[in-house]
Image (tube, rainbow, N blue to C red; front, side, top):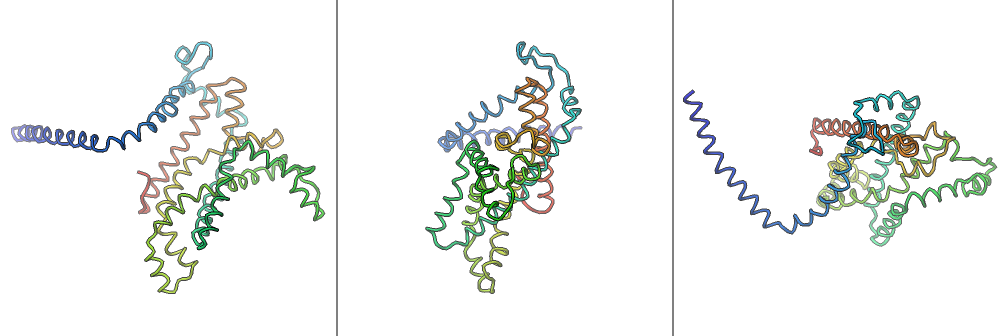
Length: 323
């Protein structure tokens, strides 16, 4: 006991100066980097106001929310809203649609951005490279409202350009936006076309940091351009690919509300109705705010679990994860 007390005393005396040193160092760093911390301030305020403060409203998922009595006066109902959500006859179809559309976008869109980045990185004509990058970036800046209008005009079964071309080959007009077999593919490829250019920015930045000596060594070993991409470029940007893939998994249930909402119709509800559109119809149009909040929390929990599992898997394979 005597020895233990001595150790405790020794520890308390040793920790006091150590804490003081840490505090002094923190204040010194804060004064030295004060302008950098000021740059952080707008972002922190934005997150607090628009991301963290609205989380208070999530508690309506555990209440029978009444818009006239307010959040605090509404009665608690526990997990009843989640039970209502899971017992909804359409819930299975809605969840499956969300997962399938998101998985198709991830599996086709994620590698597409990497492949396009590799091809752009191989362009040696700087003027042509910048022109190409600018052209493929442009669709990202067009809103889904305009983009959906363009898609609707192009795929119009009466005078759309796609059906006009098909008619030149003797094919009958196809109503693409009302056919369940086509609708998901239209969603996936229109999303890839709109965002693929924007998705290449980070990969091109990572490729710009690859040591040129690695390419020189590969060329001396007889590697052609394709082998240089495979053995030098891709391994060099692997950490970036892994991090972006983990972040993409977090959006696995983000099927794209605006895109689907603007393009879908009751004829394709069986393949296009996702959690977000369901939440909009139930939560906003039918004033079932608590049920809509429960659906949103369910989606967020699935995304969190996927991110944590993917991060653990990446770390177990010897790569660097998000944390």
